[in-house]
Length: 273
Image 1 (tube, rainbow, N blue to C red):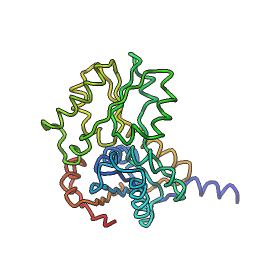
Image 2: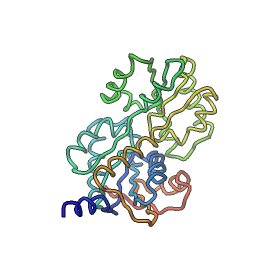
Image 3: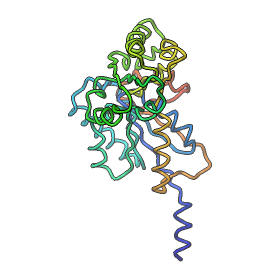
Image 4: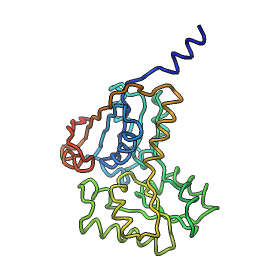
């Protein structure tokens, strides 16, 4: 009987959805990696675009929004939660893990792989002010600062440009030029995208940085961590049917932006919280 129980557990399938949220549409960059790695999983995505960016909000407001959105997704019977926002992770993930008894996966700038990859010994991080001033980033900085020089660049305005789906316009290009050049001029040969909105600007960042500069996105690593936790807790959806994606936003104008960034026609439901 014990052997039968072990076999049953090994082959159990959990078709409940995975919840993913961000301060806006930036987390779609993470959702793409999750969909690619876990094509059979159903995905529920919340863009809190009416409150974007989180980077200039108080810790209490970020935590309040994060917990409210988590409750919204929990009520939809999700089996895991991905906080696809560096600022929300830095500020609120401890509260989320304390409040909810499901796997909660968060973001953090990819300082470790950048430290291993850099040849110049200088790593540049592009992030929101909220991420760069967080205790979580401070711990990351201290952990790797003895091995490499880490220089950070706050990037006010970039989140707002992505929320407008303006990925190559004059204003966006000027901001990217300013922020990227600052890091490259200081000797950084590896740039870390410390906000989930920024991967949508990666082609522009790479163009401006030049071919000798590496640009690292953390979305793939987050998808792999999600897979690992789902496997460990026997929560994978083993059905052969391709999963579906559902979207909510706190701002009605997100519809066209999500269409552009997701590269597919989707229905955006009103979040209402």
